[in-house]
Amino acid sequence: MDLSTSYMGLSLRNPIIVSSSKLTGNIEGIVSCAKAGAGAVVLKSLFEEQIMAKAEAGLRKNDMYFWYPEASDYVVNIAKGSGVQEYLDLIKRAKQEVDIPVIASINCVSPVEWPSVAKKIQEAGADALELNIAIFPFDKHATSQQIEDTYIDILKAVKAQVSIPVAVKIGPYFTNVTGMTYRLAEAGADALVLFNRFYNPDVDIATMKVVADNIFSNPDEKSIPMRWIALLSASGIPCDLAANTGIHYSIGVAKQLLAGATVVQLGTTLYQNGIPYLSEIVKGLDEWMQKHHYKTISDFRGIVNNLPENTAAFERIQYMKRNFD
Image 1 (cartoon, rainbow, N blue to C red):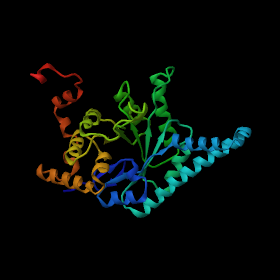
Image 2 (cartoon, rainbow, N blue to C red):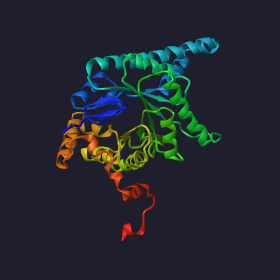
Image 3 (tube, helix red, strand yellow):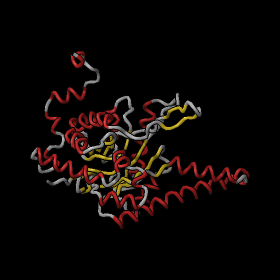
Image 4 (tube, rainbow, N blue to C red):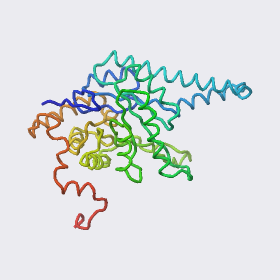
């Protein structure tokens, strides 16, 4: 079977990508992913807020910065430069060690700081860039239009600085997912990663502290990206679509591809089962294709959208009484 495919113009040996995570935050993990059969890797995200937090910590350690305002700018720039350089070094090393596409990732919340960094990422050799944009809508004065415009502004600012493909990873919490995804595609996104799985808080009733809820996805969450990938691919959105969240097994990969996904990203299942488990998922997809007599990925990608009743099922948002009879 031929599992090869194309994603944002990049040639992949199969449509299974290791998503941005701690697993891809060091060269050992990246090499392990490649050896296990990954079609590509997305490096652990470079966080805008994380770098700025390091800068603020540096300022707090020395009171002199409060007396010399210009010194605070210097510290911020040093912190940013240090964090970015480490990331650029990882990209360069990864490109030397593996022969699969290396996709960098930036977690950004504004269009100001990161366009120049994106250019450096391209110069370091990254094959593509994934913008992980998550803007928490807490400001009661900010309209949904203003928040959505920020996503577009970030994308356009980055696209103006690089020629490598750019994907945008978003969450599902928009008033109009279809409208927002089309805006991103029309603004230049080469791919959309659907969907980001956000941090969720919980409360420890013994310590009264806020703690992280379950950080891992479960297979039941696969239906959220699958629904929107099916609808968007059927509508002809002019960009590639990557399925993310809730995909743990080879059958889950097949389902997302049947719905129209260009590629599938995996994370949690590799944490839980180990990176070598990736080879089992690739093998399982190959065996499923053989069983159903598909020779290539394109033979079955999106075919569930060929039946009108399937589209209607993906559009349904309410349970009907007969489902429980």
